[in-house]
Image (cartoon, rainbow, N blue to C red; front, side, top):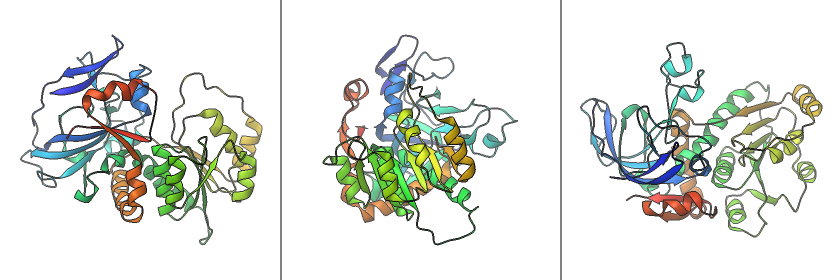
Length: 361
């Protein structure tokens, strides 16, 4: 079967013939891949910044944002049936008995760093025709989400953050405060995060470099967010307009931009980092002001990456809500669907659109 293979030692990415997998365990599920999302992580892997093949292989199959259809189940599978739409979690447990997180089924909080990740670290990914996975790692999406369910995995980044934000803000001894959220960046992670924040009741602002008359700004406006171009309003002016900035959701991977915004986080605020900066992004910081604000304003800074099953379930529920509330805006996030043979331009060509997808069926 066809697959997009990454060969790190050869610094090569190409279409390969990959053996079709078979169910080998009682809980195994065979999945026909329908779509695989392409994101910045995939482009960085194809620039050979990171990415590790499985043991004994000189390549790995790319792709971690998945949507598939169940075509066969093992004898111990009870929750899934043929025809179900499923999205797989990305990260899998490390082998160490001492890792309490992985032994509790939460490899997204792995202590050792020896976890595995589909399409990223020591596991084949989903940019191929069929995969086999364990039932426990698969999340069912309703049929009405068939054309947008590929957005579940990028949405889990925001969902994991919101689960943590709710736990952290239980520290505050009152209810009724109207919360403001500032989203940095208007890519798919930023816009999906804005949708999740609005759904959670935040007054939401999207702060990004594109001019105000662009498709991303139009989507932000359609969901009820306020879009502001960074070139049109300095952060100091925007923060004064918003009032207390309760939450900043960073979705750019641009460290300079993020740390220029951090000093404007409000009292009791939370700053969420989702991006991984590329090389040569060292910045000068006013560490005294940052530390002073964190202490005197009771602030929290956290990072969110590769979510657990709770965030996947929350993402599916929220995607259903988005589908009912903003169907056109949700569909507009997916700006291109391409055959697997078109992988090269998506991974190596100029970045374009919002969310591009390899359509396998």
